Length: 349
Image (cartoon, helix red, strand yellow):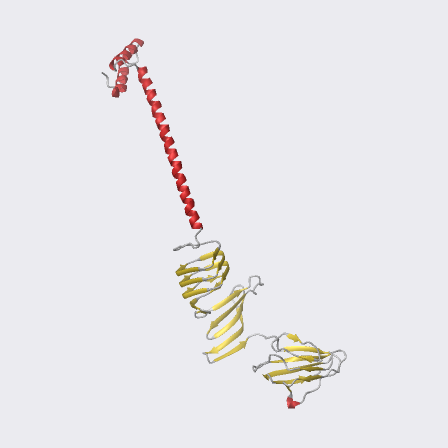
């Protein structure tokens, strides 16, 4: 009997043997020979069986695909549920530990505690930190649009870089003390809405001189206006490098006129009657000098007496100019709360 495994090749060889001149009779004889060889199984029966087998295979394939799809949907649902749980857990955390990286966005914390903090950059649009505690802190750049820090505690801290545009180079931070250490350390202020060449100020220390300076916008030229010059801890003086101006403080006219020496150095008053210039308030043993401009009103002939602390040359109190609208000036120099040296300059016109 013919082996079905090689049926196709045998049939093809028989067809090839007939050649292009084969007749219908030849083909019929070939068909009968094939049926006899396969045990009288017709070609149509073979095709029918093959079709049935294909249907069974397709049904089995569809069933398998459905099973795989259902199982896959179940597994995806499990993964999504687990992921949602993890995201919720992370969102509920009060702190996000991170070994290194960049955190960007709002940063709000009541308390950040760490044994060590090392960061090249901490960046936030808004940062409010009530308490930062660390054994050691090293930061190259701490930047934020708004930074509010109520307390910075560190056993040893070095902050180098930009903090809100201000350079801080600190070798140690102690309670109530921040030490900036460099060959010529400076603290700079920039008034963002100031005019051109009118924004920058700084304080600089070099060669035992603390100098306050103003800079141009290009930071290429400055003018010092005040210096504190020291020699060790035994000697220091103040050097003014520009004009020192005092506002004129008006005194209230009345039967008794009292100047408050905490309010200024130069005062003025217009007398509306006979008055007494009482001993001034807030006088110390430290020297204070200045003057009081005394004007007569439109009537004139107003007299002024003085409290006991006002001391004149030879103990003689000079009279005021008495013409209407006359102007005199009393100059003074404080020696003690009970001794103020003074003299009267008259008839300024």
